[in-house]
Amino acid sequence: MTPLAVRTVGAQVATGTARRDSSPTSGPTGRARPTVAVIGAGASGTLTAMHLLGGDAVVWLIDPAADTGRGVAYSTSDPRHRLNVCAGQMSALPGDPDHFLRWAAGRNSEVRPADYLPRALYGEYLAATLTTSAAGRPAGALQRLHATAQAVNRVAGRFRVTLGNQRHLMVDAVVLAIGNAAPSVDWAPPALLASGRLIADPWLPAALTPLRDGAPVLLVGSGLTMVDIALSAAALSDTGALVAVSRSGLLPRIHEPSPASRPCPPVLPAGPLRLTQVVAALQAQAAELGSWPAAVDSLRPLTSQVWRRLSAGDQAEFLRCYARSWDVLRHRMAPEVGVEFQRLRAHGRLTLRKGSVEDAQAAPGRVVVRVAGLWHGFGHVVNCTGPRTDLATLGDPLLDQLFAAGLARADPLRLGLDTHPSGALRDGTGEPTAGLWAVGPARRGALWESTAVPEIRCQAATVAAELLADVRAH
Ligand SMILES: Cc1cc2nc3c(=O)[nH]c(=O)nc-3n(C[C@H](O)[C@H](O)[C@H](O)COP(=O)(O)OP(=O)(O)OC[C@H]3O[C@@H](n4cnc5c(N)ncnc54)[C@H](O)[C@@H]3O)c2cc1C
Image 1 (tube, rainbow, N blue to C red):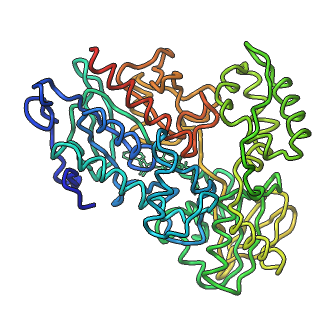
Image 2: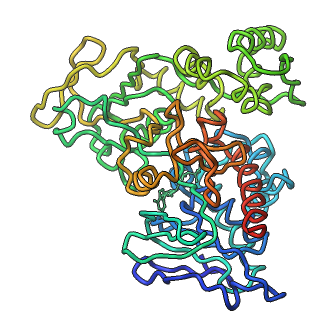
C-alpha cells in the first residue's frame, strides 16, 4: 500500500495513544475527530474503515496480515478461485452498484456484470478502494497496524485496545471485523491428528504445497471450500485421486444465468413467523419460479428480517433440519468453477462419498482412514469443513477476554457473537455494549445472512454511521 494518507505501522513500532489534540485527530473546527479501532482488515474491516474515514474519523485498522482487504476469501492467488457472486453485485459501496464493475473494466474492458471474476482481483479492488478513500483525508487519518488485538477494555468511557506486543491504543470506539474462524478439527481421529498428513486449515498461505506430490487426497467436507481445494489440488498434480466425503453428501449448486429482474420475495404474514410458514412460502415460490435456488435468492432482501421474526426454537430447528440444504442452494459455484468441477468428476478424478471419517491409522508414507465403513490410504487429508462458529470454545485470546470482561457474549445458537440489530455487541447481560460494534460473519446468530459482500457493505455503512453519531452524541 503506498497511499498519501495511509500510514502502515509494524507491530513492533505500534504507536501508543491516539492523540485528541492535533491533526489528524482534530477536525477543521478544532473539534476532536472520533478515533476508532477496527480489528480485522478483511473485507468487513476494510469497508467499515472506508465509511469511518468518510465520516471524518481517525481509524486504526488492525490485522497481522501483510495485506489489506484480502482476509481469508480474497488472499488466494489461484485464478481458479472465483467469486461466487457476479461482478455486477460485488460493489463495495451500497450507493454505487457499478463501482466494482467500473474498477474491473479499467483492468479489462471485456468485463460484464454477469462475470464471476477471480477472488484475488476482488482483494486488490478492496485495497485500492480503501487507498482512494484515505487519500482524500488528512495524513494519518488511517493507520494500518500489523498486529493482533488481544484485549479491549473500557477505561473512563473510552476503550484501551491491547496489541500482541503489549502496546496499546486508546480509542473512542471499537469495531470487531474478525471474520470467519479457522475450521474445527474435532472430527479428526487422534491418529490422523498425529500423522502430520492433515492440512487443518487449507486457507493458510502455502497450505496446499504438499499436494504437489501426487498422492491420493481425502477432502473432508463437500461445500464451496472443498470445490476450490479440489480444483487447486487437480492443478498441483495430475495424478492423485481425490475423494470428498461429507455427512450430507450434498454438493453446492451451480449458478444459473441471472433472471433479467429479481423475482419479488415470497409473501409472508406480518408479525412473528413460524418456520413452517416460511418453508411453505418458499415451497410455493419454488414451484412458481420452477427453481429452488431462485426461490432462496428471492428471499434474500428479507432473509435477516425473516430470521429475526422466528422464535429461538424455530431458528434452532432450521439449523437442525434445513441449514445444509439452504447452504447448497444459497452458496453456489461460479459457472466456470462448476464446469471444471464436473469435468473432474466425469473423468473419475474426484469421487464423492456420503459418510464421515470414522477412524485412522498411521502407515509408512500415508495415513489409512476409514471413510463410510471402508479403509483407504491417503497421502493427505484436507479439512474443508468450513468455518467454526462456536466462538466461546475457540480459545481466541481477544474473544476470551471480551467474554470474561462481560463486554461480549456468544449468541444462543453459537453461530457467532450476540449482537443488537444495530450491530452493537451485546454484553454479558444481553444489553448493547456502548462503543463496541461488529461487522461481518460474527453477526450470523442475529441475522443468519451475514457473510457475503452484499450484506457486509450495508452493515459497514450502517455501523460506521451509528458509531459516529453515538461517539459525537457522547
Ligand atoms: C473461501 C471463501 C470464499 C468466499 N467467496 C465470497 C464471494 O465470492 N463473494 C462474497 O460475497 N463472499 C464470499 N465469501 C464470504 C466472506 O465471508 C466475505 O465476502 C468476506 O470476505 C468476509 O470478510 P471478513 O473481513 O468479515 O472476514 P475475513 O476475511 O475472515 O477477515 C477477518 C480478518 O480479521 C483478522 N483478525 C481476526 N482476529 C483478529 C485480531 N484479534 N486482531 C487483529 N486481526 C484479527 C484476520 O487476520 C482476518 O484478516 C467467501 C468466504 C470464504 C471463506
